[in-house]
Image 1 (cartoon, rainbow, N blue to C red):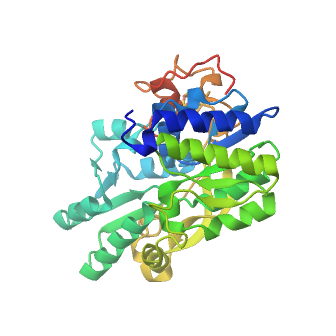
Image 2 (cartoon, rainbow, N blue to C red; image 1 turned 90 degrees about the vertical axis):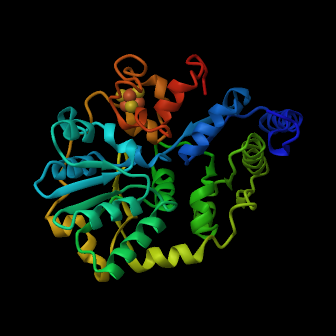
Length: 368
Ligand code: SF4
């Protein structure tokens, strides 16, 4: 940390910590971050361990790999190994455990054609090079990644490429926040809102949450000062009883978001009900293809269906994702489940809360 960078200035951080302490005096506040990058930033910067004990910061459903439902994992595993199918995926999904200990990594070792890609455009290139096969890109991610996938599908259509398909497992953040707040088990008093997602969707989709649930919410950046400012803003709104949605990341997030990116998504996809691990079906929280782009829907073209699938035995990812259990409270944490031998997806992804707790060796006796 150097004081030459105002967003990492130790003196400013100290000042903000003192203000937070003063603001929360006499109360305990439970805030949640809903972005895996925030989870990692809070731990890596040390902010998580510096907060007063009366500020409980929960990790939420902010890791796209983690929230991918077990039925969705079973569906893509069913496709892996099928004659004439190449699965193209981001690397994180390779080790996500599915039914009976299956995974893409195992399927690949057993001969399935699985390619790790860094962008959907790589998957498009694989489709061009393999005209006799169907290339299925696993469309996982929140509003941040969806525009690129939608743009890729548009290119496939413009090129007349018929063998590029997508399994649309995309998820939308605002409906998930709504579902969390409607859950009587949840006791969240403020949301640190995702910076990257907000850069696409803007501020408007969050406003009904503040009005309906009277909960403070702050769009935050990822530097230590950003994180502390967001926590202070939530604490102050709570103290004053004036909940609002605040954009505190204006250097990246425009209030109106990115209308161009949203227009591309709206051309290719439409909101549909979606399954979330640990939460279940959330109305209109996912994306399915519009009629004009149905020819790119792997479910429809290859006749795959989402089937009921049991949660992974012993894994408590569902409770971790809802913020009702800390990762280290899972009996398997650090014993049967480690990043080297993950039992559940929250230990696989670098943005998963279990993996972050393990990597940064969070004080397991802490009451945060
Ligand atoms: Fe699942 Fe492992 Fe996390 Fe437990 S520690 S909730 S088994 S991923």
